Length: 211
Image (cartoon, rainbow, N blue to C red; front, top):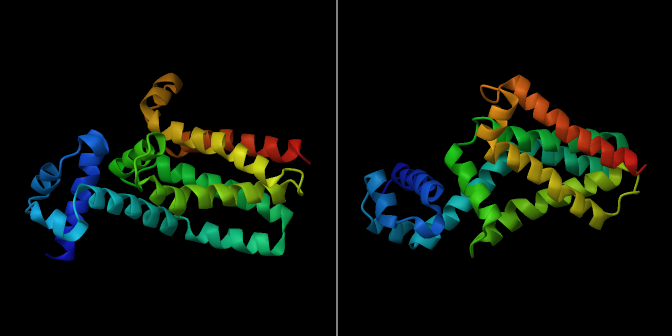
């Protein structure tokens, strides 16, 4: 089987898992919608659990690629213990995640699978936790510590990151409802900046409150 065929199976899996969840998804539908023999799922992924794990790993790889420059900046800021830069990178990290979840650069199916697994973990949750959730919570918490001149303790920083990330997830998962309330046609640049300003206000509050 060609790499293109394998990618077609993965794309089809994202659509199936997004629509029906892990437990409701069927491998015959994944294969059928990709127009590929169902035996290929067993051969390449080991079955339903394997292709779901591959989908989660694909999410991890995609987000890491889209945030690589910010992660490099984070490493430099931590190494230099630069307080002012810590606040800037903290805001840039929040911006990158908001834009990943709220614009069209990542497929809707991929975002749905991520949010579903985050909200209702399966046995494969460790892939997201070890690959994305813990590393990015850790980065955010360490940036909060540095930006506050150490007045925010690391464990408190971890706690503060949960509602911050949750806000961004809500902006994505409740997009239609938010747009109705705000009378927006969608998330254009102006609307995304409005959402981002709100998140940045929370970060400013946390940092300044603890200085």
